[in-house]
Picture 1 (cartoon, helix red, strand yellow):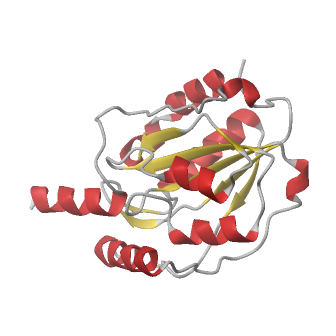
Picture 2: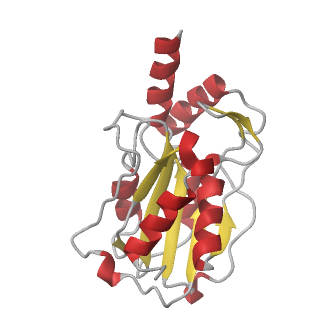
Length: 207
């Protein structure tokens, strides 16, 4: 049963990566390109309810990390919300996520962010479902142009690290600087504020 549960987790989260807790990756342009004195926004999707390893949670893993970023840097937030996944158990959710990805579906989401022109840096966060961000995040990517900005991907996961998220952000926004990516195990987020703080210090957002 344990082996089966692990297999399901890796499948929904994507290819299993190394056992390191934090994966830090930078592109060739490096973190020096980040304007840490400019205005920042955290765009993220987070799934509350049944999550692998942490059980039924009222606050999704990615939102916990997004809230740390806002608390530590003062960044604004826009949460990508959809009621499509509400109340779904883990296994049916994995199956639906796989089907959406295979069909290239772009589920609708609620609300819209404030004017994006005011932001120099955008953190982009989500769980890793089948190797990349949930499809509803690609709905956001298609609707809003973040080219010309510095984009910092982050993920929560249970074995897949960043998956293909960095490459997918680069593909969605070829004229943006994509750098400083970060990932954290979902079961560690509630005790992992220090890891987020260390990452933000490395990027220069915290002195």
